[in-house]
Length: 312
Image (cartoon, rainbow, N blue to C red; front, side):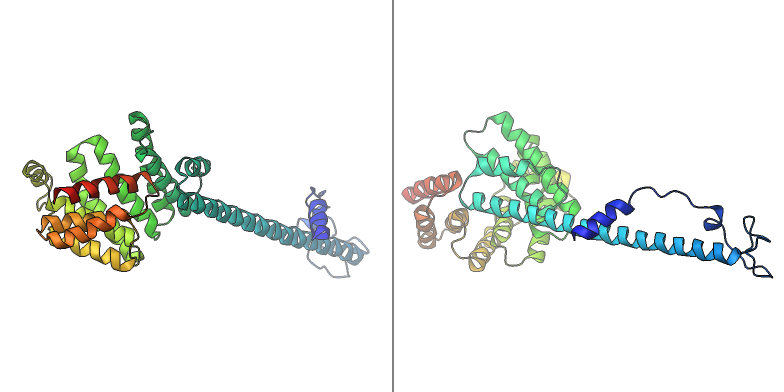
């Protein structure tokens, strides 16, 4: 390898231009002379031609060496870049699993200009998670929400077939609606659901996305009358749903990955309450209350589940 690299560096230096016979086509003339302006009628033209051809072969060999060395160097660069991305993703997933939200964001924000969809959707998620912290100011929450949306959008542009990019684009688009008003939020509803559905098509086993479709259904099922009037002005046929449909998705999510998310347990309980099934509501709300609290969201879920249990 060192020898190839050394040869590449030497051969990469500019070559001195040879005589014009190397730059113009040669033709053979009668009497064994070399044609062309530099060879016509010159005795010994064959010797000149032989030397020039030898030099041409040397130049061609040098070009091949440079090309091969370039391929080798480029290959190492690509492998190195790939290893670097994989290392960052591995660190990011560890921090996410450990609930280290701020450290995770600091790690990933360094790669905000990356072209890797896997890094970008993780940055979108980290930005959103940081915005959800109670210690984050209102202005920072707004800024992070828009940053998250941009990262998710870029991840989609880089890889439209990445299910997580679709999922987090839908989530972040919904979050931005909180800052732009109910009309914008309702107006984005169909686009949000389409991205969730596309994510499920790409990865039918992703319980979180199935849960999110359940949340979408639940939100439209309990939508107050004034929001329905807004929806009627935005769509020829306003989106609708039912608590039964929401319940189906929450159960589908639980089947895909049992006990995966405290909020899915909570919404199973809340949906059963909406359907006046107190027995099943007690079962799922109790599970939500007892779910180990790893994040601030888990703690909020425990609190809401306890309040609902006390109200039954």
